[in-house]
Image 1 (cartoon, rainbow, N blue to C red):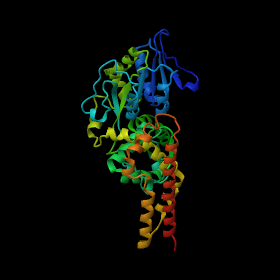
Image 2 (image 1 turned 180 degrees about the vertical axis):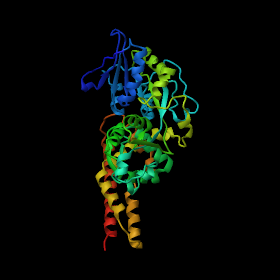
Image 3 (image 1 turned 45 degrees about the horizontal axis):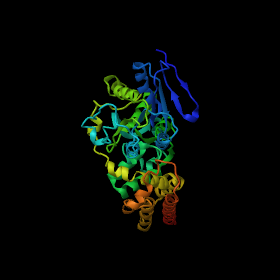
Image 4 (image 1 turned 135 degrees about the vertical axis):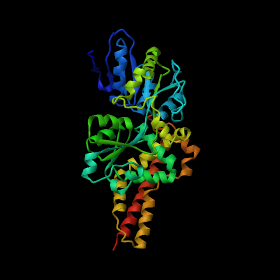
Amino acid sequence: MSLFCRLIPLSLAVILLPFGAIQAAPLTILTSFSETPVNAAIDGFVAKHPDIRVEVIYRRIMPSLRLLTEAETLSIDIIMSSSPTFFNTLDKEGLLAPLPITTIPPEWLSPHTLGLSNKVAVVGYSSSGIMYNRHYLAKYRLPQPTTWQQLASPLFMGHVMMSSPSQSGTTHMMVESVLQQYGWQQGWALLMRLGGNLSAITARSFGVSDGISRGLAGAGLVIDSYAINSQARFDHVGFNIMPDSVILPTYLGVPRSTANPKNGALFIQYLLSEQGQAIIATPGMAKATLSQPRLARQARYVTDKGLLYRRAGLLKALFEQAITQQLPRLKMTWQGINGLNTHGEPWRVALLEQAVAKASMPPLSEQESQDPALLALFDGLYDREQGNPQVEQVMHQWRQATEARLNEAQRLVEQAARP
């Protein structure tokens, strides 16, 4: 059947998708996903329910929260995202309605889910890993990376892309997984080294897969669905699931403010049906279905949700100040460290080790990161656009401390390089 699409003004960032009978109540979906996976799900739903008009609003997490809490706003019927912190915030603020149907995720997937089965439906899941461009790697004689450590090694300096935890819920989960698995000190040391290798930090997580496909970088951190979508179009794209991959379920929730819960229930039922699960497994959505347990069962890491939620705002702010805001200085510092030839002389080796320690250190110790007052100060920081002088002051101190350590690391390198 022929489908009719039209685009309404960009200021609303809403795409109107196929519809049949104009008098039918619409289904409005708010999502943090990109268009490709969402369109794949909607096309199948519309084919089954041609009388329902579907409208999709694409937003990042913070604008989505603002949209859901504005007094005068569009009516939202379904929220679709893989960010557990997003849904946790919605639940804390009383913005989620009980699901109109009963859904229970498989037992093998439950450890990786939110645990809000009465308010959030799980329809599939993704894993995370490293996407790479074979042509790029061959050009620069680089190996196919399989671990965080490889991406953070001197070999990959200038060849890596990633998004920011403050902009991408999936990136936040991946960064948090590093800190939970390697510990605060070693985890941040790995992240700071990786920061020195970044050619760019993208505004959206799917910007990483797009950039790698286009040859703007050799490798980057993505969820598997973005890599699979890219592989469907480009033969030169590869993907390696990391051994310490984080599992990211795809969630659907119904806002308490919806005026149309019936269509929301139909959409959830469709994605949980045999037909809907088949769509989820196609290259469009590229998710593992609820009948495909292999990736989830093989995962060695399960996120500590309490820790994730508790320090979400602090972690995002710290990454911004220590890595995103310091990117040029960070790259310059690690370039000096990686390029230093100590000639095996003990005094040069000692200076290099000091430089590495300085450049690897975040501006906040693990003990300080557990301070309840500090955690409370940053709680919900990226859920709303609001200014807080105290928060700004703390972040300025972090930025200054990071700059001072990187400057000291550079000084040590210069000292070690002297004849």
